[in-house]
Image 1 (cartoon, helix red, strand yellow):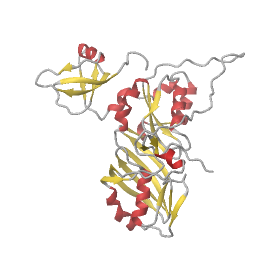
Image 2: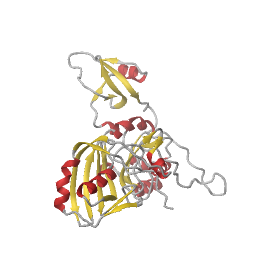
Image 3: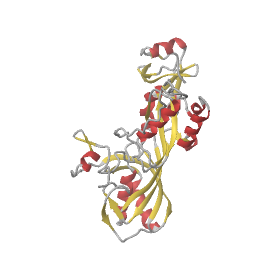
Image 4: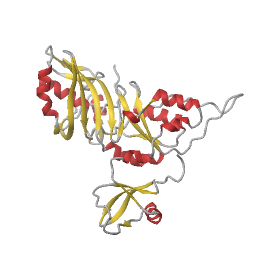
Length: 340
């Protein structure tokens, strides 16, 4: 019986995953000529990992955490083992900024194989319908406008959506018939990059909650030939793109080369907040915010900002806050006095 991974390739949502940690490679603490394991340390920032195909997001986080000897780490959006591309990994205090990355725009390049539909909407599933029909480029271009802007989308049956407290993929794997309701999502761009009779390559930019597998499935149904995702690569997550990424191989090599060399791949905590407006405050005001207290905005030149903003003092991130009633109200406070 074929086992399907619990991670599904989504355009955004963090999906709960079972533990999938790699075997421990820690050096035993006893024995002649052996080095004791290094102590974990405070590391604060982001590693934008270019995840290879075949690795779960949980495994990737474990490897990065081990290479950097970091105490705390987590990822900003599950990426299926069959998918490659950007997996932003937050370390230490950066874990407080994960929601802001998750809420950002996503970009993907993916391949649709025509002529068959599967129960998972990708190559891992069982084929549920087939067709001899194959679309030409004109037929594909004709339906693309239906997949642009604010649309309603039914998530895949094998997804992390919760139904009465249970994950949809757990229910589907248990043999239950899973009926998911359509949800509003936004697709800013869906472009056909290349086309052959059996396969087409697309690029998509979209918002939180949009499933690439559902796009492939619905494209096939709209054209009348069926389709599923056969390759997927994520190229952007919020403020992070491929220009700021590092491969797992390069990170591991840096970790082996010299103490601290791998830390060069760690971006600052506020790299996740590049899309937010920012204000600078004085040291006394920064101290108030650090204690969870609000700070009044003074003078005619006080910024008029709606929504969250980042607050800094002398170039150091202090808090993510909201402005309410002429006051900066801290939402998340950062302790960056130590560590990286």
